[in-house]
Image 1 (tube, rainbow, N blue to C red):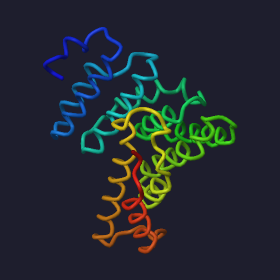
Image 2 (image 1 turned 180 degrees about the horizontal axis):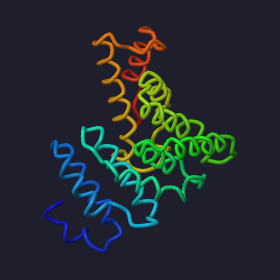
Image 3 (image 1 turned 90 degrees about the vertical axis):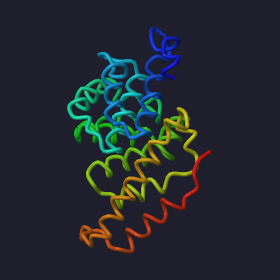
Image 4 (image 1 turned 30 degrees about the vertical axis):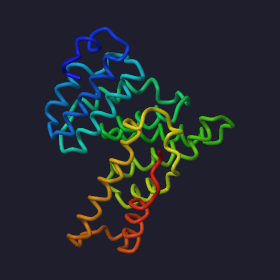
Length: 221
């Protein structure tokens, strides 16, 4: 991608998304710093920002933090950019990425507003209503649970998602953020088990059930 960046990296419709894919390669090689630099130079959306660019920005910052990087104040700016799309009620894929930004920014007020809007949309007699019921709402709730450290609930919600993730939209590379987050929640739960420091409200059997349910659930094609 670096060798051909001149062909796609400037003034093309795939510019931002191309840099997003390149940043994923940096992350895969363990270079969260390079991925952050790419975000600052190429991916950070302008105000107000195109939805596609906001999606790439949310996904990249979230993955960087899953890998141990620190996005810092970038989250607050991104969450503010998502504000105008909070009640779009258009696409579950968009809802999930908006929730990534709000949870990443620690903006529980906006996250709660989005969850209420998504919960209301699940009754719509449309394709969006169906994807919201099956995937969008439980995924958004799982992300909120993950953000507040309720990993048992997050894992259980991720495990409840049907093997229909392709209906969410986007590419497999983009949708993978849900599995990556679920895997991190499982890792955090297992560390708690090993340290014998589980929250009292979660019993050992409940945690074991949640972990098994996530790790053996069928994956979407």
